[in-house]
Structures are given as structure tokens and as C-alpha cells.
Amino acid sequence: MKILQTKSKIRARMASFGFTLVETLAAIVVATTVLSTHYLGLAAGFAIVNVTREDLRASQIMLKTMEAIRLSGYSQLTDPTKFPTNFWAYYSEKDKTNGHGGAAYAVTYTAAAGPTTLPPSYRGNVLKVTVGVTWDSGKVTRNRSMDSFVSRHGVQSYISGN
Image (cartoon, rainbow, N blue to C red):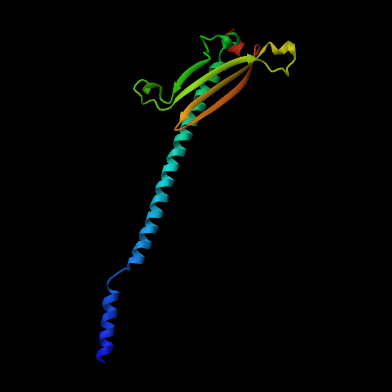
């Protein structure tokens, strides 16, 4: 009987040591994998939010310029003092001087004659206006553009009086 009692004491003592080395290493591998994928998921999420924020600001800049075009007279659309061909806009206009303005957006503006598919008598009364925005987002250069047609006898003459 003493022999059986000794074997059960040895088994009880071995069971009380806790986890084995293999179990500990497996737990470390699983924890490392879970934490690293969690971190990468958060980093990717923040990067997507940043790119979306920059894209939204580019759309706002284009829309602001298009609204100015809509409210301007036909003769003003080809005036470089009213609509310069190139200018810079910033994510935060008030913070652009101290370096905290965020992304800098290069805005281009072109007003060209109407498309050749229009009859020649009408083509001279239509302008194709294009506003483009280009900016650097990390290591990638991104760009967006909007096109619109403006007629000499459109709503602008009612609004601006030209």
C-alpha cells in the first residue's frame, strides 16, 4: 500500500507545477499574433480615415471653386485675376503659416472652348471648365477633378449682371 500512496503523491506534486514550457510558448505565440493583428488593424483604420479626410477636403476645395464659377459672369471665367490657373489650398487655412496646415492641395483651373461635338455656332458660347486638385498623401500623390460646361447665356448673366 505504501507504494501506491507514494506514486499518487508524486503525481499530485507534478500536477501542481502549473503549465508546461510548450503550453507557455504556444500561449505567447497566440498572444503575439492577436496583439500584432489588432495593432495592424488599428493602424490601417487610422490610415483609411486620414485618406478619406484628405479626399473630402479636396472635394470641398473643388466644390468651393465650382460654386464661385457658377456665381461668376461668363467674361470673368477667362480672367486670370478672378480665377488663377494654379493656386494652393490647405487642409486648415488658418494654420498654413505655422506648418500645421495638414496637406497642401495644388489646385488647377482651366476654361477651354466647348466640345467639338457641338454645332460651330453654339461652340463659341460654351466653356468647358475643369478644376483639378493634387496632393501628397504619405508616399502617394493623389488627384481629383471636376468638369462642368458653362453657357454664355446661362444663369450667370442673371446673377452677376454680365
